[in-house]
Image (cartoon, rainbow, N blue to C red):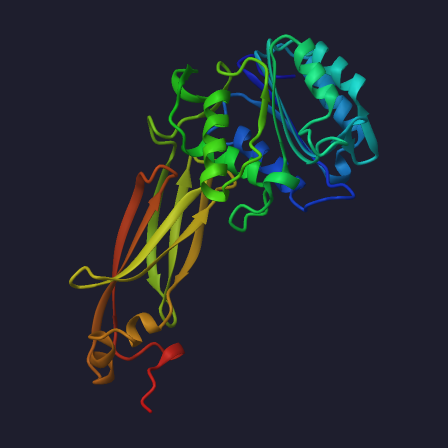
Length: 354
């Protein structure tokens, strides 16, 4: 049973098919994690079914559970194949008529149906099958956001998601809030779609933008990180390692499934940045304690016009690792500076003396 305070029920489905792009399950899991993490509405009740677990029986049971609970908002996310038959699942199809009946039975006044499709329809001119549009028109309060991954593309900077889903998740993590909900600023369905479309066009010059059907604009999706920070992070310690590396120990609280950037830079005593980089950490729970190795190429010191020759002469070079933890809006959660000195060139890249 859903807790009395629950406002959202969410069902995420990711089902690879014959024409799979290899991102369907990752898409669904990542959307599920957003809604069940620190940015999701309080008390969200969510189900995630991927691969072989997304059977007709399991999917129908998830819809049946949603029809028994009275929550104001219901979200269905699907990544996979949708044709005139309906949605492709692990052991067949959930037919269009059955889906229409499920949506009719759900008591939530506001329903959002998000599709990131490998195959949208028989005709390549259509993004979604005709039944999707018919359901959107017939069911009051239903809105649809849909894209075809085979048009927009897959791959979000190595994260393995379809571009539409990746852009949507990024929008929900970085956009300004436009709805007051649960005493905080939230990002609406319309704001999220507007921002994800802008990301698709800016980053990949996408021309096949996602389609929308229904009354967008009043559906809260995720807590905005712009108005106020979410959770906290702490750099517990920095220890120099072999070659030009260090190990950072950290703690993150109240940021479950929210990407957190660990930025590191190696500086000399004059604050010149010799090299820097980023590592993204995604906490797997409300309290996440871990360690991360950071590393720069040895040439950062070996090829430096001042410090390389200094080390060649056997003199010591004093440097500092500056480490900060940041949220998606660039807000600093914590920072630490750790001093170190080298008496010789790091072994992995001695300068040629030939």
